[in-house]
Length: 188
Image (cartoon, rainbow, N blue to C red):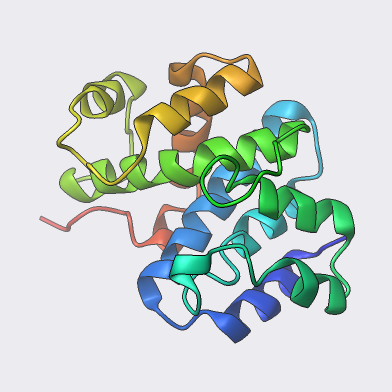
């Protein structure tokens, strides 16, 4: 099973851009919370979340086309590689999310971008963020415009969950890692 330590070692060997590492941490934090929600192994889900964009920095136009074999060669379990590939379903892969882990990764990848953008706007960062405020930002398509809201909604449908419930889980997960994510807010 993929450990968080191994995922960080693999990812950090390919990813040097700070914003991509931060994105990996955001997704990792959300995946921890989703694992807790589903009663699954938190470290395992965190590891898959951290490693999900393994080839993106080097191959942004061919994302996930340079992931499968290198990760298998590095000893990553085929199920974990499949989960990573599934987050690009309908965009750059045809690997459909099947498990709760895969569906969660598919959903939180984009969702964490909106949560992060909202936290950066708030003087208190992630601290005390409420889903009501998030939902207002989510509905404003100009806010964090690059985050694909239809994909997030599709992921929530796959999970059989309401968007606000998934957002609440992810907000709490990211809030618990706010310092590591640089989302503690601005000192007055």
